[in-house]
Length: 290
Image (tube, rainbow, N blue to C red; front, side, top):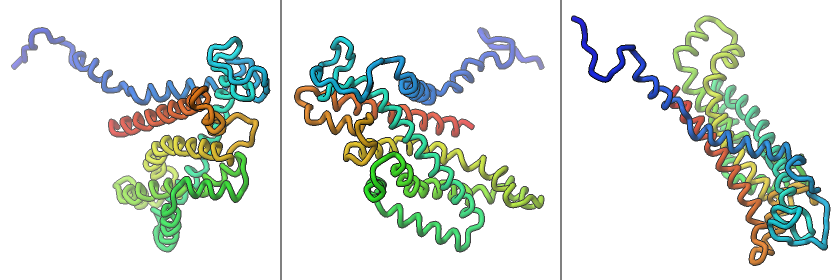
């Protein structure tokens, strides 16, 4: 029996569902987050093209100029340094350290979690006890204490965040491996006689690492907040190198008169955190669709 199409519907199969499929594929949070974060990176990379001012050059006669002053779009600080230049060049430091400081914990935690979840035994027991001890202390307290012991500077920040941050990735990957190693594809790989390293790298890792990557987006936000906090406490990037945390610390004493000195770097931190949070939400949405 020949079916009669409903009035108003196209005779071509599948054409009516194309707009719906395209709408489902549109990932708003991911696109907006990537756009915001891309603009921040572009502003930091092309800072010399956006402003010609030297971020560390002092000009005391032009100190505390308001935004919109000739030659100083966002005004100057108490030393006469251009605020816009310090914001852009400070983004270079904070974004670079914030992103690179997450790479080492991600790699180390993924490797340890992969081995711990697959083999188990005494290695898994020892690793989880170490993870429990590190997690028992607040992240910021450990990072600040380690940087204080190692001394201020970007090198100390990298070491401190790596020593503390790997535990979260190890727990995430270990939990994913405990589930994935009992799946049919993992059991089939073991039954086929493949070497362990090949099963871990070619079969398990691609299926468990995405959760860690999604978490890294939020971890970058936490790392940038740690960098800003260290700069605020004087334990971050040594002056006069611009840093959002040190800019907030220097501007807080002028909150009643030149509030923008502390508000602008704080707003930059908020925008960065919002962009990375949207990227993480978009990745989660993409994972759920798949």
